[in-house]
Length: 115
Length: 86
Length: 253
Image 1: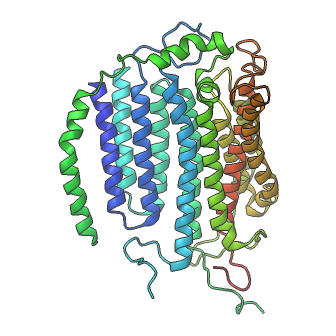
Image 2: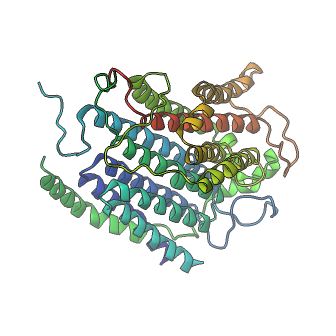
């Protein structure tokens, strides 16, 4: 039951994030919806690596034989979060340049370069 | 433990929906910070303290600040001042 | 494509994908009980092989160290992109005049906010440094500590105003820290090749487990990542906050 809720949450976050990107009227709102899609991938990876009645993969207080969850997926998600924030910053810089050039953030009213 | 995980999964879905349904960017920044906090709690419950550290620092401090600064910058008056000063 | 047509196409695509998604959710491997061979191997052998107790740092800097090199250069590229986009349009000089946003009230900053900023900013930067140092023993590392250090400096902006904060964050130092971190990682990876060993082989002595100075080459890589992430996020904050300043004489872009 918990497992199915986990994968259902992943699918829900992916779907609602894509819905937000498709129906967004404001470019800053669109970048925020992209962060929801990123969160769904983090949850998927960490859900795969989980194990019941296991501790974190840090063996400072416990000897290295105690049951622990998967450290490989945690390493992937950790770097992914920080780099994802940097890519979000890059997208926000693009939005800022777009606003300076055209004066609006409306996703529907900006057309490609017209002669 | 499984009840805690169920509750946190549900709250993640709720805050994620809150980000998408907050159409005004000023309100969406708070929704992003709330989602970052709930995700950080969820990662702690999934026995991943490193990841929770990372998500807390990034999702509640760095990314909402960047969003807020972009929103401030889009309201600045950018007409050239070369004719306004002497 | 009109927004309504786009929404209809999206709903159509969701209707096509939804049965497959439900099927996948029903038939995923059991949550929490399925075998994790690589994770179990790292947990069993990690402390004995490399004398560290934080398995996540072990995977990040030793077992999958090459991936972290790629991630760090992705960060470098993204920060370079932001710098080109924003600083290229604006110029290199810091502008001191605050931008004027019509219709916004001008609220005076209270003394309590200034005091909080001045007291907590050095504490948070120190805490971030502590997190970077304890990469091999307890949860921490260069990525987390770097972001904490850069975010701690923002409290000076909140407490003391833009001018003081901008004088503190010199872009020369931040650029140098970021470049130094990335090149330290790459150089530490190339060092074993001088001795004829593969790239990123752990050639330094491993030390004792539960000791701060354990792990060998991972300490150097961790320091490189810490410098790069702290410098990178500092540059990001400086570039974005410069955009809130007034447009200089002669008009901007």
